[in-house]
Length: 322
Image (cartoon, rainbow, N blue to C red):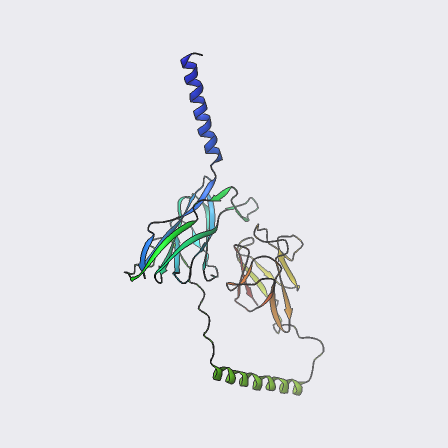
């Protein structure tokens, strides 16, 4: 074979291998940090990065942290038009979500997330999950397929020596608060518990007395409000819409047979239900990821009051009202 023919074949093989490698390269999301060593009281800045050839209209992420070593402050996206969607936070897990009304390029930094160091420790941050969102032809938000998570761990060394605190606010971008839930209420003393128990007994006796005076009514009482409660969808499928709960129980899930159908891959076919009992409304988890005001509900029920924020799955969010 002539040398020129060998050279041409070799060139063709090189180009073919490069093009094949490029075609197999998945769109990525990964976590980075500019520094790994800090002092107590300093601000840790981590970046959520992405490489995507498809314009996006939003993204979500969850970052695991040690609440004894770090306290989340906020996040900001440098992408123009990306607005933060506040979600109920859980202790030890940052839950961030951004959305845009128009498609945006996602090549570089998606968001900058800030934490404050609390004391000397060896710790780290873990990117638990992340997704890029697009809008389907039907107008629903859906995760972009084929996106992989690259580097997901950032190791941190925090010295117990007090450092110089930095400005917590990002320079630019839509600021997303990431305040963790308040600490648990301190336990009551024995005397306080006794006084509280006494008040409860007196209150119960008063209620019984009033009921005996009024007399019983026929059948169980429904919630006092004559107006049907309303679910206001804030994020996810049907965002911006409101649903009146004229029929109870009301089942919510991905299956079209539910009273409220949410076409979301992170929601199971029959995810939760809302029902009335003893003059109150309740939300029951049916096996999916269900949160009320940031508190996980695992195959149990929680009472619902006007203004309560409910999250189903990763990003479906609605507010209960009456």
